[in-house]
Each structure stands twice: as structure tokens, then as C-alpha cells.
Length: 86
Image (cartoon, rainbow, N blue to C red; front, side, top):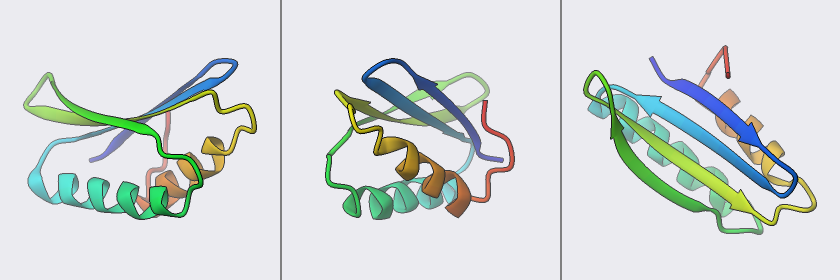
């Protein structure tokens, strides 16, 4: 199961997508890459390991004064069929 978490401040927004196996990893990375190419801003992205042999892909937008990343995050969450986002 892919878990999602969004954090946002005045000009900063971050979407974290946690996954637990290779199939989920490929699905997440492919979806994010596709959605980011539609965006006019290039976010900072990185992957790290978390507990229970899981990984997380983090997408961060800095200086997002127009709040465009919210739409991109929403598209990613819908495309991955994530029902709950913390």
C-alpha cells in the first residue's frame, strides 16, 4: 500500500509517498515523473529508507507563490489511487 503525506507552509510544499515493494516503487516513480513533466516548475526530489523495509519518495517545491504544486500533488494522489492522505 502506498501512503501519502502532504506538508505545506507559506511558500513551501512537500509530498511524501511511501512504498514497500519494487512494483509500488516503479508505479510511484513513473507517475511522479509523468506529472512533473506537465509542471512548469522543477521540484527537488529525493528518496530515503524508512522503517519496516520501506522507502519514501519526497517531492518538494520551494517558493511556490502561485500554489501550483497543490494541483500537481492532487493529480499524483488520484493517479496512484490513494484514498487517504495525511
